[in-house]
Length: 207
Image: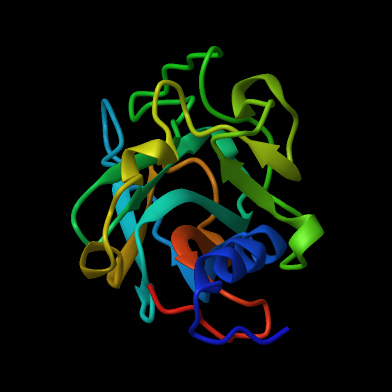
C-alpha cells in the first residue's frame, strides 16, 4: 500500500498503524561464563558477572520490554538476575533462593538446574510483565513466560526515550553460593516495544 502526502494522510497513517502496530526492536547477544561465588566462611562471597548488550537504532519511546535467555547452571537457587538500562533503571528479573550463608527461602527464586533448554525462541526462559507464571512456583528448566520477581516490572522502563534506550544495556547475574561448577549464559535477547510505527519489512513511518 502507498500513501501520498495529501488531505487523507492522517487517515492513511491510521490505516497503516492498524495494520502494523507498534515497532519492536530486538537485540540479541551471546553470553559467557557466569563467575562462581568465592568460597568463604561463614558465608561465601557473591560474585556478579555483567553481560553487555549494545542497543542502537531505537526510535520513539519504550512502551514495553522483555528479556529471553538460556542459562546452563546446576543450582538455579544460587542466582539472581537484574536488567539495567543505559540510563540506570534496574529491573530485577530473578531473586536468589539461597543466600551467601546457605539460608534457603522457598518463597522466592528458582530451584533445580538451567533456565531454558536452548537458544531457539520456544526453548528459552522469557521474562515479561504480562506473564501469568512465577519462577518461584514453577519447575526447572523454566521454559516459557514468567513474571519478573515481585514487585518489579519492565513497566519501570516505560517512557524511556531513544536517547535513554540507545546505549549499553546490562544483564547482571550474581552467584551467591560456591556450591556448583560455574554456569554459562549461552544467549540472551532484549525486546523493546516502541511508540514508533514501523512496517515489518523495515520501512519506517516518520514521526
